[in-house]
Amino acid sequence: MVRQLDSIDQLLSAADRALRSVAAAHSATRPFPMAAPKADAADLTAEQRTEAAALMRVNHVGEVCAQALYEAQALGTADPRLREAFAEAAREETDHLAWTERRIAELGGRTSLLNPLWYCGAFAIGLVAARMGDRVSLGFMAETEKQVEQHLQGHLDRLPPADEASRAVVEQMRIDEARHGQTATSLGGVQLPLPARLAMRVAARVMTTTAHYL
Image (spheres, helix red, strand yellow):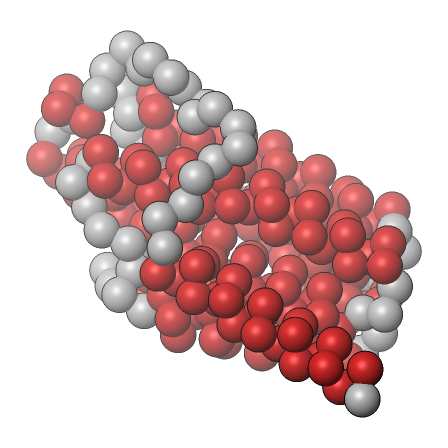
């Protein structure tokens, strides 16, 4: 009975965090990466603002998915050490959510209309990874962060050089994601087979292409 109540409590907590991830405004625990950029959004052309806002929307979606993945993986492990590792990564991803939300607003853009869908899909994937065992779950985390790091580097190449604020956010996110991936590997994550890695890339491409517009 106690175990059943504990499971219900975990599910309620997970539902609460899901609502907060997709519907609430977020507060960062760390300062915005660039407090006083030399140029603000008003100094960019309309085309540059639109493109930068779209790229930051894609990055925001990635952080929504990260919250879902880590929540599901934390629920799926019985190891307290791994549960805390997933929770710590999720806390840093919350900073990313807050930073990207702020920058999107400054650029005059909006977050994705499909955030609830992205969250649910990522949560389901995280549960599947967790059911395959801790080492596979950690391997999934490591591969996810590796692909995200590459994706963020691509955004640094595409963002307008004058958009220093967006670039500072993306660079700090890239650093954090690389560290999360290294942590997952150090905790025992295994390399996923090539078909799994390719499938993850295809799924990410669908998400990023859609989120760029929606």
